[in-house]
Image 1 (cartoon, helix red, strand yellow):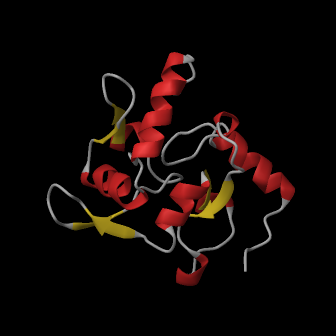
Image 2: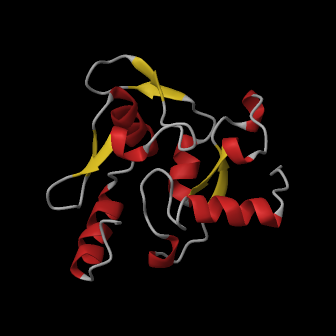
Length: 140
């Protein structure tokens, strides 16, 4: 069962994340999907429905993250915490490849988050290429 999120808080979260997924940075306006308000620390793990624990996420990132809070860094093999969009700065953990199509992890947290959420899944990489041709990607 999903938690009720007051409309004013929803508006603040959308604004905070510029109507983009807090993880893969996809703009909701570029998709046919309705994005979701995601509990960064899952409610099942005691996460509350507060501004500090909510972010805006595309359905795929939200589903892939599910109740995860950690994942294995594919480089070090260590279990690390996933990116916390309210507590951490996106640009410290991620960057775009030179062609803008692939998201790169700059830290163990970034790499683990990319792997756990399947952020470079083939379908999304392909559509990013189209968005680049349209001048809609990468986000500014």
